[in-house]
Length: 151
Image 1 (cartoon, rainbow, N blue to C red):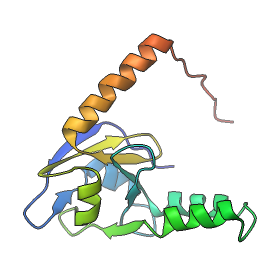
Image 2 (cartoon, helix red, strand yellow):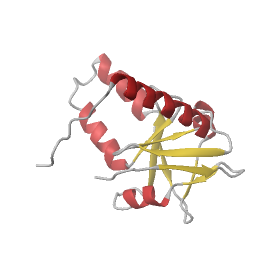
Image 3 (cartoon, rainbow, N blue to C red):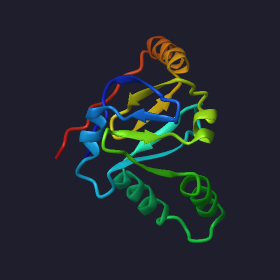
């Protein structure tokens, strides 16, 4: 499984290209599609990112729902119709579509934020604000995480 770790702030050039962090490219290099998959977050003003293998897992999970059910239709329309496969160029850059940049309020820099099996792309200021609030909620609620050992 690919793991996306750390936060990287990268500049966006005049053409809308941004470098995908090299560690993210390395994590995705064994997959059949040499690039990233992006879609609008359903909970944040950010972009959700992953590899094509993760999208296949989402598709397989969707197939467990009743075909043609309202939930199946809604999720298929909302997720897959809004997803972009973005191949990186020889320099490791992707072209961020304007409507995705607009959605996430991304101007001249983008924060690539590792989230384990996935990553997000944020406006750096918006992510900083989000991270501060998340840390405060964790501290206030004394959140813990139960470790699951690999079998």
